[in-house]
Image (spheres, rainbow, N blue to C red):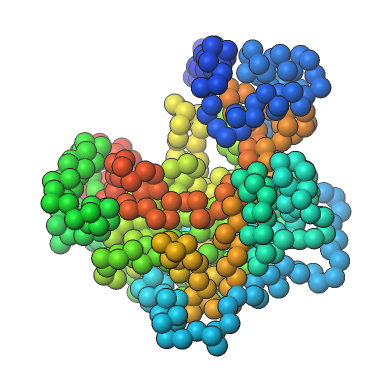
Length: 513
């Protein structure tokens, strides 16, 4: 028996066992067996199918929409043969960005609240998009132009009455968590606005700088000048604000937990010379899709800079060549935490979680951190590689590489955010940027399609299409630690990148053990 056949048998056996256990659990305790928000509407979702066989198969075997199953194709979907024509201005959504505050009304105190420190821009991350990406960065203004707000599956306003960045928050008058910005097009026809290929970053000089870290060798030891006392000043703001006497002890305890995970791992450094800091327009390419910068001064010398990146479509990953997890709208982010103007750590979002790293550990161009965006899902990673998650044996994985380099500094909308008063302000860097869109509490994409929709299926609890995401205000902006999860959970901040078997030994050109 070939290795390929063995892997296939193991994969299918795993899925069959998973289906059986899933079905048994749903039968015995259906109310408590809710994995995703979509599962809360399971009864009405299953009932949407006209097929008696499909409804029974879904309830008892967790095989839903079997007639809709199809293997993953490259490219995804089927492009329309004739491009949809637009009326009036070729890009009317451009005007959505022209609102914002009246600067003449700002006094000195107000301007101070809108200032963003220069170091936030100095250490702005760069993003390597995947070379074979099918769905590139999107413009949230353009996204609004091509969507219609729906309360569940019912439009709340006419398709031609487009929401804008300045009035999007008015949709909160309905139950906002049930409002979905729904595509006016069938997403499987791959409309141009959904693909975003016009937003592929283009380097001014047609070249990409090599990324480096800021060390001239691999060191298995403490980062010089980095102490537990220093960490205690920025690692957990909750402890600082409570004024705990045992802050140091708590830090040591959490560090010990992290070390169990990091034990015997070489800290990732890199050999090679430093390159001079390139000029902004020589680093990477400009995208027509703007990045969103949101800066929060959290006191005690700590400033968090959130960089948000939007995509109009998230292409789900495949398991045994069947695709799951597509959704319209996709928000990803990177957090850079500063302490007294110095970058200390970064968080890269990936699916429902992500990973945190010391600033010294991640790759850089000059002093700017480098992020790798995964194909389709746009999850953010610290290395170009294959990244397995959730399922064993790499059945479910992301892939990243050194594709087009995106410099968000070249097209951004920058804001400051006061969480205590829930106030978003356009910064002095981009004073005309509208703010109302931030307050929208609904979903930035379609509601997961009914079982009766030919595009939808579910297998082993995983949907082909899921709900569109909520916006940046729901990304735990007021987090005390760097990690996105609960502040009560352990936050592991890695001071290395890569996997154990892939890290090279000191002075060796071959991978170490």
